[in-house]
Image 1 (cartoon, rainbow, N blue to C red):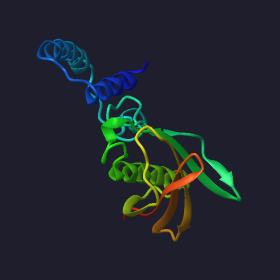
Image 2: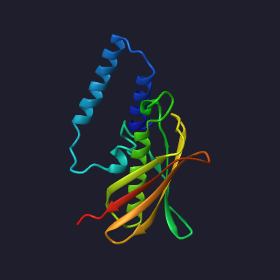
Image 3: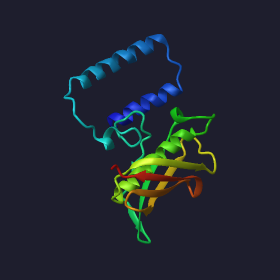
Image 4: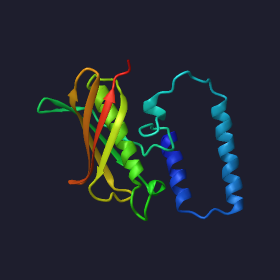
Amino acid sequence: MSLGDELRAIADLLVHRTIDDGTAILVAAHLGEARAALESLETVERVDHDRVGPWRGEDNVVAPPLVFGEPVSRDGVLVTNALARCGARYEGRAGILHGGIVAACFDEVCAVAQRDSGVAGLTRTLEVRYRAPVRVDDALVFTAWLEHDDGRRALVRAACHVDDDLRADATAEFARPR
């Protein structure tokens, strides 16, 4: 298991366990040792977003993680694909994935789609339409593609499916920095 996998596994266990004081003290001590080991390492100026980013960072405990495949061309349009499985720590209503998590995943997928299409803009707006609830632990399949680019602003559309069912779709506008 990777560092991120271990951290996410611990976070998932915390959701479904009652922890006695003795276990909490023991685990906190071990985590303190791990933190001290990490603090001894050299600080870097800019972090690797793919490694520690909040939604796709393989070493980030917060990241589901959102795993990207290679972009594919469909009818001449570059389509970005990503997969995620969000556990109980992302639950909103009982058994249902919090809508804010779905929106955050859309923001990341749309940002990667516009970047891969050569835009390199910043999110200006994001509109998400929820079509059906997404259950915790569902395998989410995201797709996103650049629909329009006028040189200043770009429009990206995206969809989230579970199996073959559309659960949500999104539209995001990106603006290039001046």
